[in-house]
Image (cartoon, rainbow, N blue to C red; front, side, top):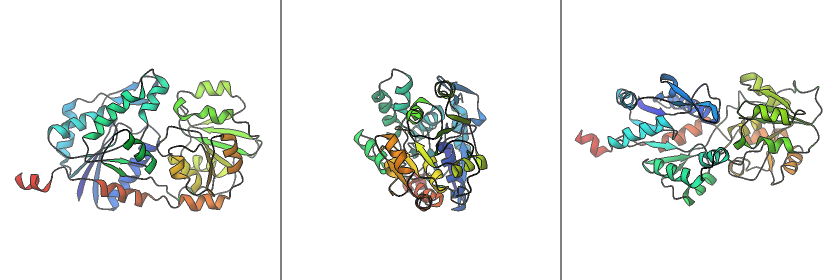
Length: 342
């Protein structure tokens, strides 16, 4: 079997699109004949990221990273994140003249700028240097590719996302029936970069429901006591929330894709969002979701959409196609000439 190592700083117990995508794509790749292993923070000591304790930074020694990669004798190396593990894996590959691919998941510069007085261009300079060493950098949407090309990133390759349409599927409205309708749902991290407060400030009559945890949760619960905060939900509990809502609100202006949008649509839930990177690539069928610079208007228009149309649009996003895109972008760690010389 073809051996692939995926290096990622984002892993369980984090619950986010990066972790879900890497895990699900790995399972699909196994079905395509790959032997997939992950180099993650699980095996090392970690420390909480300042201002964001839910994210843990690995304190792995470089020797352990090099030993793990060499011991796996991979045909392909993919470095998924730009954190400590990704940085050390990159150093090992460059030092040993091993070719590798990377992926760009998060608008990290905007996340940092939302918390700290760090100009985004400083962060983009680091990211540009980090990904410049890769044979290909996988990006989730065409608009992300255009944005990075304008910032002088090179060797970009499209890698979309998928949804399990058998798991995320329409069902009866069994939740929220005791709350005034319509029921407006947000799912994701409750953090400043997700712009959740823009959703909570909207004046559409009904009930605003927030599913998720994060550093801004306590503050927003205090400021918006009329909203319903359910905390983190997974599995059937999350699917039931999607099925029972009337509109899914995606207020983020910093996400590169937004997996939760296709999860919601797969459950028959139309989406309301701003017309920004992420939604403009996902909500390409106006029957499935509404985008407007005025989030109130986006919500009102989305409430008029047909749930069946949202479901049909979500079914276009499959994990198998996602895995095939990923596999097509991989490069062997050595060129044919280097293999012969070895």
